Image (tube, rainbow, N blue to C red):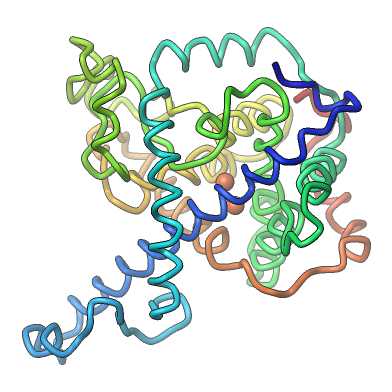
Length: 330
Ligand SMILES: [Fe+2]
Ligand SMILES: [Fe+2]
């Protein structure tokens, strides 16, 4: 039984584990995205004789120009270290994310308020829990939130997108309320109620998920109609979906912003190209927006730690602009 976030009991160790897992998942995602871009770039280049290039290229050296596209040997090593932990995590996630669980999670979400606080307080709370567990933690959630937001801001992107950068991972506080583990808070997401696409990472672990034996959920369309639009699709429960519902009901953020929050972990869709048959025409615009946001989420992590107190007034004003009710119901 988990303690509520406002109780004196702080579940620090587990909070730290969650953070480590998320780091691992993100490093795997960053690596795979780099590889994809590198391959695409190589395929586009007419100058490269592919046969010759592949003969001389070691598998762990995918070269390309530009920071985002370079895959170093170090990346590759980190990817493999992370991969074994991430593997265990995804076994858990793929076996337990069932339609039955997802329906219950939504009932739980709608029938109670877990905490009432400002967005900034929630950011601090999330970071504090994690920082307390390990003084050596390099970057906390608030650092990642500020780095993402600041990267978006310095590129001259609109204010609503800067706010998305700040709050996109805030739903992880779910972990301190009524999640059942890490598997229903972080990790890549995917649609429920239809076939689990082959593009999903560690697809084989769905073999242990009862939905794969369900007569409807196991079919390609499942409970959906072709091109019904992602707004009609149930995405696996986690910090994205949770924060999306909060932002949708309590902020004035636009459709694009809500899509960035809702789909940022939906890698099988925004990176691997799966589930096109569920998309409506307008989802294609959302896809471009989510892909644009993903660059900032994955690659804004730097050693630069921003001065939180210095940036606070700017972001408090930004939050107030889009969350008219100061105290948000989480
Ligand atoms: Fe996230
Ligand atoms: Fe993030």
